[in-house]
Length: 380
Ligand code: PLP
Image (cartoon, rainbow, N blue to C red; front, side, top):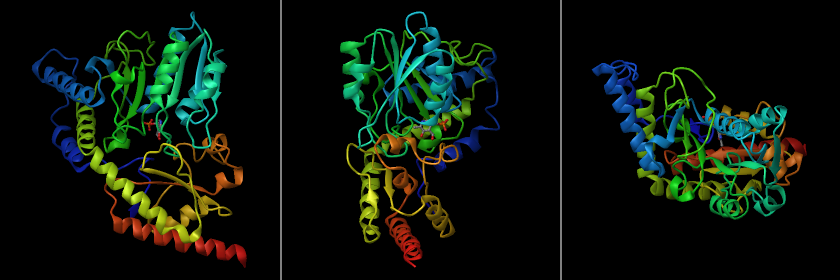
């Protein structure tokens, strides 16, 4: 099989699997305990967080371990807005967000918060030129995706930060960095943002674990109450083994990031040129990460093509995995000005450094074959 859906999720690194099997059975003590066995786990978590903090450019005590980015995003959006409610109730996000942000915003709107959704440019980035017209004195949070999960578009965080600093200094910035982690360089302190969300399963770590960066001094209500772990910001028994595995995945990916990126860029270029005979629309303009490729074959239902590729044991996605059952077509593409018909014929191919040129040649040849079959059926 050829797996080209790495933006939906990816396999854990073999080192991560080894780490789990080595530690899961013996490192079971509750890190909150006072005896040696427990203190060892507590120390292991501290060491893992130090390593993660070094990779992301922050302090270990600015990282909260969550069950994944959906929880991180819920914690920031609800926790920050409820904590700041007396000062202001306005949040700005974009039309290009993952459903974790979209649905949390829908909930906040029901609770009486005011939310604006910034449109996207045709390249898929946030249209920041519109921000000054929307932001106001009661804007408390600007929450944007760092790298779009459907198109790979990279948002300009530095520009956002400068706009905020100059015009709305009271507003905190949250970035959903799920698709950017180990794909683009990230230094949280240098970016000067207040919050960021991360997910381990997108970087070859375990599923159901992620991070929330909370810059020192931020006032945030917890989403989950209980035993007061993680400075009262996220209660629940901590999982030293999963945190260790996440730290390991982060370090392996960070060390190989530039080499991986060069290889993935070459795979992408090869794939694009190998499918030219069936005339794809390739959404390749603007600043993009190489691992996500958004394309369309006009007139073809992408779901049909995805299933034909599946029959050939090639796995890719017709939309972002998390949204595919909820919407008939992509909200992100709609905001970029893509027609409904073109959106319905759109695919996401997402590469990883583990893919080979042979994988790409084979997958591209199968795509050409299947698209041609569908076009031929149309013509008859
Ligand atoms: N944000 C983005 C951009 C994503 O791609 C995803 C996962 O698809 C999420 C958030 C949610 O992450 P998790 O699966 O860790 O909850």
